[in-house]
Image (cartoon, rainbow over all chains, first blue to last red; front, side):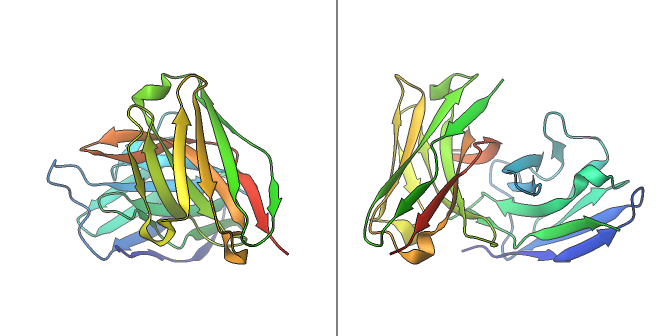
Length: 112
Length: 122
């Protein structure tokens, strides 16, 4: 199985400051179709996960542009340019290039 | 708007079975798949498998093979996930998610249900 490793596991950020989460996969997530199957989800407290970023760097419908994704191969990053109070929750990366699909352990973001 | 509405919480005894439903609306059901993901209390997310709402093809996580069955009813736009021989470590919130097909598999989960808590306890 592909192992997804997120760092840090938690971070505390002052509103208006940036935040960054790293996700590393044990194998390349680049498919022969040219796409890289790496996703970012946010699970707000008491809610279901919601899709933020698909295929590394594409913001899903309605996701604010302060969220951005980057990376390639096995190393990926989610950045929040200016954290807001509504961004609290647990962020997960997920790979779907190979079965079984696997998630990172999650990174808990809290506001200072 | 796309909505996935799941059935209510369940309490089951070890060895029993549970069947969770996920009713879809706001899109053409057969143009997507449904994936199931579970989350044990205080833990992360675990992918369980997916089903094509188009032709019923399935793909299950190997650790659940033989205990899980995913089905759909296209007449009601509803997906089902049945888990048998329940154990205490199956206690979790079970989520369904709409899945987009790409390169022969269902890879992108864009809309999620509200979750169904399944508690396995004697």
